[in-house]
Length: 217
Image 1 (cartoon, rainbow, N blue to C red):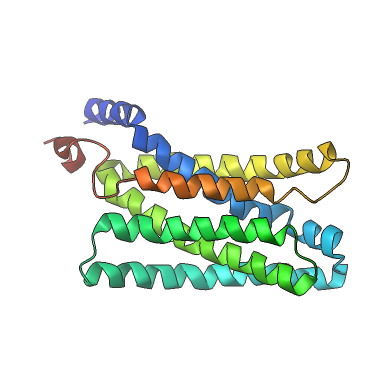
Image 2 (spheres, rainbow, N blue to C red):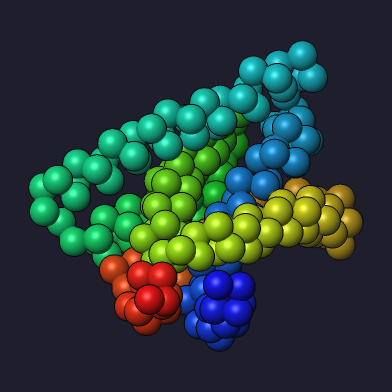
């Protein structure tokens, strides 16, 4: 009933892990949003990639992302079939992936040469595929009949992050007097924060109690 549904959403808003899911997706899109907004400019300004080469070079990390989401889905189903617990399956890969992304971003900001930088940046976005699959699967695991509401709220935080990242990167470049040396720190810190946050996700437990999670009957 509408009253029960409203009451359930109110309970969700008081659940810490509900906000944690939004935070995790915010951090994830902070990394991904850099590629969608500033990555081609970064290649041009830092590594002096010619404009005619930016198209195919900047698409390489996205190709890695497309492959990784497929691999992550297969891996998750395989681990479940092998008897591994839901908590390990949903949190292990994204923790490792975000930690890897943070490390690759930190190194990529200081390497010389277009090829090494592109390889590092491609690996970083490729790792994000494992985060995407794990997080959206966890949303379905913990949300019950409120999956639509939790999904919408999670997408909101991702969209907000995608809107703020271009502003943040532009602000860093402006504040540093036009230097691009520290711009990768923003997505790197976000990735590290997300890796830590995943330890508290607990996808094996519903956001609400068992009765409400099952439908309030």
